[in-house]
Image 1: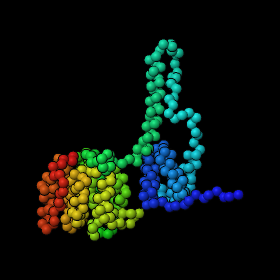
Image 2: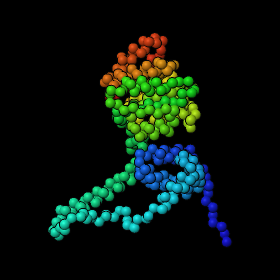
Image 3: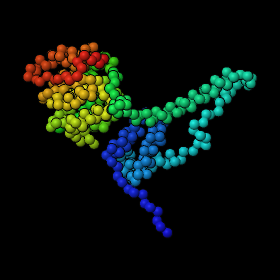
Image 4: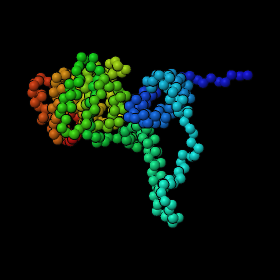
Length: 334
């Protein structure tokens, strides 16, 4: 008697690990228990079982998801225990009968109203299910090129900072200065410290900001972000490629030393880019950021804010190489 053929074993690729890590984050960030169960059932387990059919072990997928083997096993058991529906999912449910006195056979209006109400209930249920899958969305794409299309974005500034250890930087006060400048302008601010490249892409696609502000230590042709809690030097080409494949804000502020070489590739993707041609310390970058966003919040264009309202900052340091604007100087953001 021959033995059944063993399932081939393989590991996860870097792309698959990153994808499963994002799915695990979705589960942990779900607002309610019902939403969490919906994401697990409709998205996570489907992807996990596809990988299992390809020969990936359960333990490897649990590590990528950021959960224990027991947790993943519990998810699978809970999904396997679900009752199987006996009716076709696309069949219309029967009209809901409401309690009350019997109606005459010719009362077609009331019957129609109850049927519509029942179908609306089913539509809402289907909408909740589709919402979980909609959390994994990408930016609108150009059907000719397949790349994300620019959009105006929301009244939102995404402030991301890299790992502060390589340059001994303090990025927190810079983010606080931006919050203070925009506090009365009804502009939302989201902050992400020690950001990873995949986290930046997800934040751009999810939040769709009008401005991306980057505070990091720059050097050796790249900028230091983070990966698994450790500093990671990301090349300018890799950073530009991430912006290309994600939602593109209207303005990118590269508030880091020697970031001018990155402004050229980014200017081809977004409307405007502000970068520094030389070195800039924490105090200078913090003062510049505070004045820049204060001017933008007061209705100045990007060009007016950079060449007019920020002059007071530059006068404090006469020898400082001033930041450079590439792109549209006439844009009004807020």
